[in-house]
Length: 225
Length: 353
Ligand SMILES: Nc1ncnc2c1ncn2[C@@H]1O[C@H](COP(=O)(O)OP(=O)(O)OP(=O)(O)O)[C@@H](O)[C@H]1O
Ligand SMILES: [Mg+2]
Image (cartoon, helix red, strand yellow):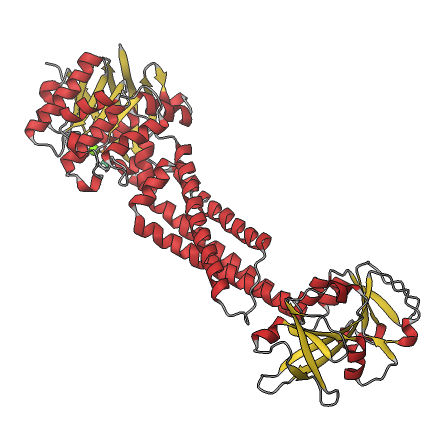
């Protein structure tokens, strides 16, 4: 079943002479139960693509459909709700609230989304898988870049979202950890029937992908094997 | 709430500084207000203690007790009730060997009328003859004791302090309560004069003499020398101080919120609803201001306890509550101004890459 569909998405920044076209007629599709990788070099438009997909910014033209909802047609508040309940975002940088400990990052989610979060046991399993279970009382500033990134992944998965959007989730991880994260994301897609989209320039993730798109200067093409 | 408290806990130094600033500002406003009220109170303490609503004075006195006289003849035209009382006022300088001189107001009373009857003493007894006086506690604070003999002018001989009373100041000068004939002696006008004025618990004194006129007690108080000028000076001072402090606090809270926008962007990207962030911001401001106000109040109370009694301080709780409320409201405003920015904060700004 189609979870995410982007149809003829264009995104321009600025106007007049300083106008830049960052996304150019992007068409994209991801199904439930699938891990889709979007590969591209720095500056190719990956983050822009992902944030438009997740409703964090709007496209200049085109339609984004998530779970049968055309998100350009729903209100800001509904989008917020949708994001809280259905989407797990792993942002490229600066993911965590600096004044909350790891444990509190999850507690905050409990405060605003009262149900359908992972239970304690599931959370501990997740933290163990990511090897951050002994860091729960630390603040983000006390963690390494890679640890921060893994907490951010756990944080995004905590709401048990149907759609997972991850921006460079492995940027500061060593190969062993990349494999763990790859396996984790893959199992979420396979065993829990989630739609997982990972944008990255990290080729190490290729093995885990069901399908791969390549993005270059704002143009997206699906790789055919 | 959760976010607000966690953030305060984590950023102890920053929030302590802001609370400290609010403490100092509220302390400054509280102390100044209390001092101003204390001074205002010293102008009217005696009158307030009588609980009167009007005063009958000589029409030509310019509503001044010291300038007013009522002759015996005029007094015949007054229909005195139980709620009226004569007051004979004379400015005197109290002198006694071994003590400092004190400029005071001698108030002669009729021992059968309500002021004298209702007079509450903190020690000693009421006057029993024309050479005895009951003095305001200011005298006690200055070292005078019961039984001390004081000269009030060069010709009238010595008066003996037989009692002390609290809250007896008129126009900042301590009051010496005596008798009407004691007053006549001090004034040196023989017995042709009855008194300076009649004060009344009624709104009007029944009087048919056209040279005498009833004034409301507020009119009279406003006409006390320096009273109105003093009060408007203080009112303006405190008002400006309030406005400026409120702006300062609002600006601080604004800056505080602006500094937090990157965090808000993360939270928004995670799907934390905007209204949670707005509530957090407002709640935080209220906590900060309340903490500041509570500490400020404690400091003010301590100051009042430690300050020498010669410096009058007066707490008017309704007034101070109003000041406190003003601080809370502005702090909320200060926190709300950036709400628009919070609502508009673009999660993409933090995503980077
Ligand atoms: N708000 C903006 N205003 C103007 N230009 C922007 C804006 N956001 C992104 N761009 C431009 O769009 C292009 C694509 O940016 P994007 O962040 O999507 O790249 P990316 O593929 O995620 O790169 P990286 O791998 O370095 O994260 C870049 O050239 C960038 O300068
Ligand atoms: Mg990027």
